[in-house]
Length: 101
Image (cartoon, rainbow, N blue to C red):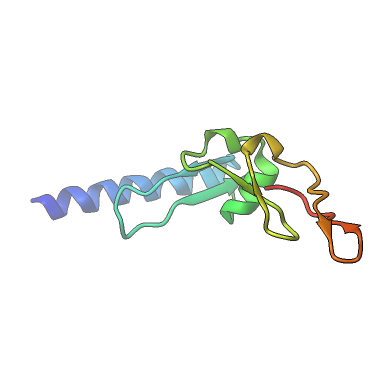
């Protein structure tokens, strides 16, 4: 009986995601079960979590955002630095030109 419930929940989630894709929605769908992966959509297209964060404008809604990372050097900062240039000094007195995401 429990397996039927899990299957029903998974099927409902899948239908919801497929409907959102057809409608060209932007959003994310967290897994109902450990074996499922989160799904991120931008205008109906499946994208990676990183791309979703960079392009959606909805990054503040993600449940596990506690730091942002520089796309070039990997330095972590607070979410307040999102989409800002890193500028961390690099060897040879050149500043890092990465962006926090």
